[in-house]
Length: 80
Image (cartoon, rainbow, N blue to C red; front, side):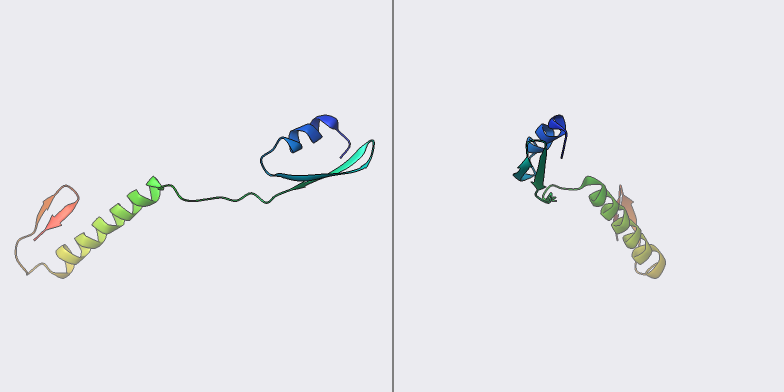
């Protein structure tokens, strides 16, 4: 690494591990691997799951079981 500005930027990063100085104008910066935590709800996946659930209910209650009584629908929920 030869640039002081880039060295300051890398050492201020949260993934900075350690610095090894070889000479006055050369240094090596070791960085940690970034870790991604998926511990928050993913709303897009939840909505896709809800839509696929509705499609599966429609297929089951309307296509495969049309003879088992009346089907009434309220919003995205199917009742029989």
